[in-house]
Image (tube, rainbow, N blue to C red; front, side, top):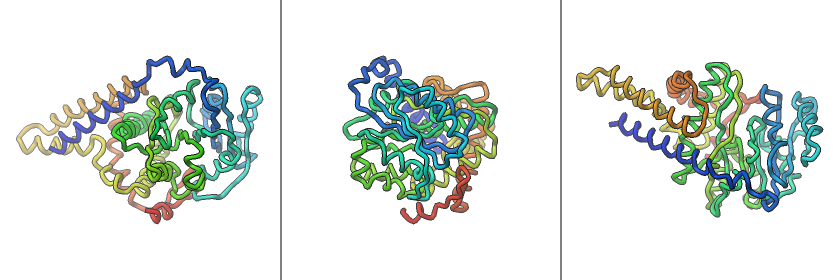
Amino acid sequence: MFAALATLLHFASALLACYRARRGQDDPSVIAADTVNLPPISVLRPVRGLDPYDELTLRSSFELAYAHYELILCCEDQDDPVVPVIRRLMAAHPHIDAKLLIGRDTLSSNPKLNNLIKGWRVASHAWVVMADSNVLMPPDYLQRLLAGWRADTGLLCAPPIGCMPDGFWAEVECAFLNTYQARWQYAADTVGLGFAQGKTMLWRRTDLERAGGIRALGAEIAEDAAATKVVRRAGKRVRLVDRAFGQPLGVRSAAQIWSRQVRWAKLRRATFPLFFLPEVLSGSFAPLVAAAVAAEAMDVSGVGVAAALGAVWYGCEAILARTAGWHLTTLSPLAWVARDVMLPALWVQAWLGNSFSWRGNDMRLADAVASN
């Protein structure tokens, strides 16, 4: 029974994600919209360090097909290696209203939020986008965000979609980001249970100021968890943009994938513990084991039943990836299997200890646990 219910839920979540990823995909009005009549927007991007695709992703924010926007890049250290790249991009795009802010603030235990404070203070427009430096922005990025806003929206987000992987472990990261995490996020959002995702966040400035301003996002160790609670307390909804944006991955190691996934799992456990509890049953591992045990009890080959169910399960993921236009190669099924083997171990690890490292910053979950 458990295997059947889990498989039906897997199919349903994939179907909802397919629907959302395809909705509006062929609508030329979003790209062709006369942006002169659309509201001006402030785009804030926190930067730190220099990863292989940073110049590509940062350049994309200078090449938006939008009439009125300002670009504010926030960095803590003037000696950061990303600073010369930004200055070069600014010089190459003098027609873009762009500025680089350098300085250190300490508002919370969240280093990214601390980096963004100075940008929020000087942003001049009523609509503000906070976007990580590794988000690849298509030319119609801002139009697509505005198109997803509804009357009851308090925050519009976009999950990262892994692209440009180099090597097997980068394929595994795609497996986590795309047909697992993005699938569940889109399914939850479609049924009205949307959660914020910090990669891209579109705010109407007055909404966040009414809740206490950017300081309110420091109430949790993760700004997206705090954002979700801020919006829900205001009686509004967090929504996801229909077609999310790429995050180029490049080379990844097993250690990097494990560290990143443990960090996110610990954050989910600390900020939304009731939603985190059933995650141990997510992925294919538990349903396949349950199906094999049930088959053996009925004197049927457990290995054969598990293999058949696995083929159907991952076939569904392949259909989702193909339909949504997400990364899909012959290595993808193996990466999906590796991900699902890791999921139970990640769940266990998330309960062991309250500390982790993020970009060289040692962080603890104590504040997040206390707020719950």
